[in-house]
Image (cartoon, rainbow over all chains, first blue to last red; front, side):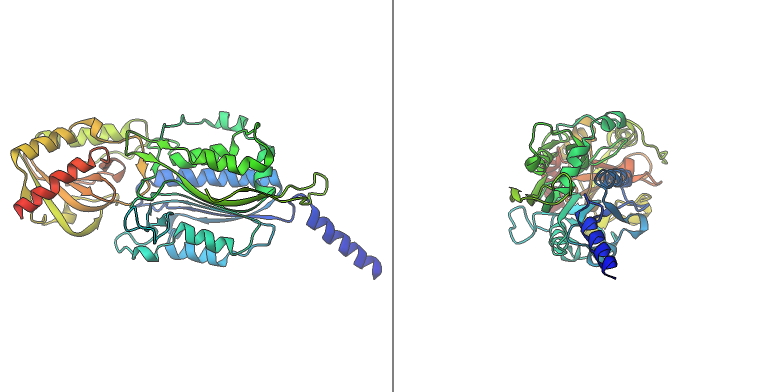
Length: 289
Length: 150
């Protein structure tokens, strides 16, 4: 009996100290790909890219993946709210929430300080639109997800916030060559806290490439930054670098066709001991941005 | 007019201008109307039937018409480099009277763009265009025209 107890204790310790084995990566990947949606191709391309990235993160970090996809006819405000409400997480888990769809600013004017700087999602019935205050809002969702106390919560939207030196499109071959596997591990295993990111500032549009692969300009910039080699940056500052680079002005065409992504983040670097995967120290690296 | 569903380089600008330019340049009169409530116009198969009868409208003066047509006929007025992640709700419309049936260009102030509406469906992928590069000028033309006529 005593031996069984010892073995159970040992198993529990090993499971808890393993390098990411017991953790879950919860990915709420949302795209407005309903048949009648204009820019359906762009949102669909974003969905596929986020899915690809999530699977890559899970593979490289040994996290179990919990994929929650909301697309096609499931794309509804209630579904988004319910999936966020119902999400159950453990304290060492990671949450990625990514919305690719139409959005609008909840502000009544650019100078309105009473409403969020982050967009709300146009996920209601377009023929019978809901009051703006009833639409799911990115910042409110971020707050709700943070309340679930996962280790790391990343909340992102590639949606207009109204009311891009265009970056060269990156081919799959080039992308495959530059995935820096060690940095993905650092980004998603060795940080705790949250990041709230959206593709444009209040009163700005967000644009998607009009031709294949049809990604959002922001999504391409953001995911490229997540995947880009950051060899000159110390581990404690990789998220700061990702967020700083992701906020670079996106020039689509002449003014005013420009986007200025915004973010808010509080991310603590919590490196794990190489052998046991234990966290060893905490250092805050990113404040509100 | 039916435009094939495709997704190739240059399609958007080419398809829109191929359909729209003759409508703009052959118009002998242009009328403007304001919708009493915003109309969702992002759908794929929107046709003129949705706006039958057309709302009361005001005819633009010759100088206003010439200015508008010169702007809308200039490819540099459009931004075909990116699609917006925002729904198109129309609040104004322009009626182009040429030979045959009138054609409508819906205007959205929130989207800062336009949608061409014809007798037959034209996919929203080609029919919705960005006009933010000239939008302030466009609005400056529409509102006074309506006020003068109203």
